Image (tube, rainbow, N blue to C red; front, side):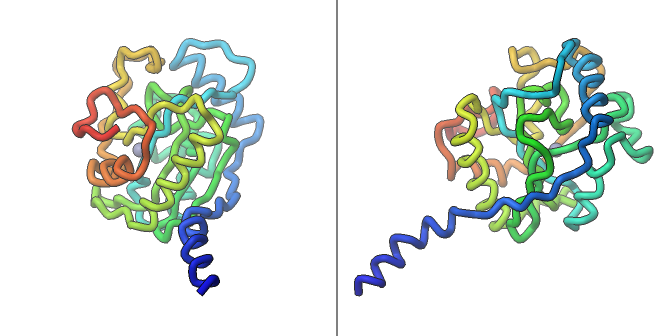
Length: 221
Ligand SMILES: [Zn+2]
């Protein structure tokens, strides 16, 4: 009987103590220098290093349903030639702090205090979580990914008390004109619909203590 109660007590703790795998992408001096260049060009800031103070978490999907194909998009340090959509944004390849597989496995790809290139205007203030999925704009992120995102967001809030917002990538333009928005090129924008309103609503229903994007279309806090 005692053992039964103990196992009940420990079950939730076990469920939320998810592991974070270390799966580093290449981040040599080359990528650091390209990041500094990006910060200069896009944010008009001269920085000594690429360290950030995170104010928000930005949630994405990769638009590719396979994990290794998704990961390969972020590996190279310079932007591959098949990304003409964001080539105007500079030579730095995209990156993300975390990638979550469809079974919920969490990978950390780079140091959390380095700037990643994952969201126009807000890179210098944010931590990125990419979820594998959303190919052909399908709203197909899994329950396991939702649980992993809930865990990660809570974990990040514990590590960085500067984090105030959790937003979906599709909400990034809500911050234009706010003090967090740094992009100086008014012509540099891309349309984003990831990860999905449904996924963000489910995530927000399971976390508390965060502000929502100024134009979020629901009322959870
Ligand atoms: Zn995105």
